[in-house]
Length: 397
Image (cartoon, rainbow, N blue to C red; front, side):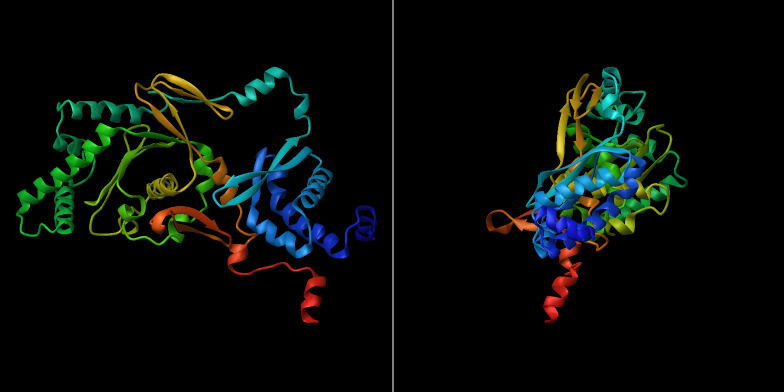
């Protein structure tokens, strides 16, 4: 009965009415738990190409569908006062983002609103001691007050049988470099030479990237690193070096043709883990302990930095800057680059309504020699369509 009334009042065909109800059911279910828990004011969306495909099946326009869906969300969720969708560009496709205002928020006082929007992120010796300690160590290295071997002794101080571990790394490095005729001392010297070059890239360039929680949270369950074909880390992200500052600690990385050096340090500066990749792949080198998640997280960030559309804001030393609704205060004597991934959160939470999509490095540019990261919708990839009964009957006929 309700569908017939809708048809008469809005001039919709039975197929369009069916589309509003069936697609609406999918979207409302998709948003339901987050809306009930009031987890976000800007939340999940759908890939523009996905939605266009679905709407075409029912003969609906974007405007008609979203007007209906907005009213339905307000009607079915008592804690929602206002809901609207907006379109945002992303690479070759677009996304539709749901913005929500929850009940009672419009009546908040001015001071409450200011307090809500003025969230501050501080990067100081107190909040990130590991970063400041590494900076001071790097300054000593540049002034030649401390040697490569001195730093290795500091890093491996708490490692059992550290001399044997370093000897094993020296052998692994020399085999990967084709230096097979060296004796034990020469292998050690070759490895220390490699590590010195890595430290020089790290400390001389000193590129620090503060990774926002919006960036790391949205990547937590994503498998971007597994769905892209690659051999070595150097082949995937190219030569690069720097420091990623996470809430828990920092990740140093130096990626070159010679090999990969990565080191995670907790903010207490008492715990950490080093990972090298010479002969084996990145995944074979991963530690099977609490540190594994941080290396995987760093890999995802490096992939997004290299290929994705990541917003980067630079906060100069001892300055502060507003980034969206946040104030980033940099107490360090060096600039920090803030990585924000709100757009990324929008994309990766959409997997074709349960049909898994994947990421791909798409060839582009002159001679197709460049690469950009794109998301391939699982909904279209596997040809899954929630077809209206009227279309199914028409196809049989």
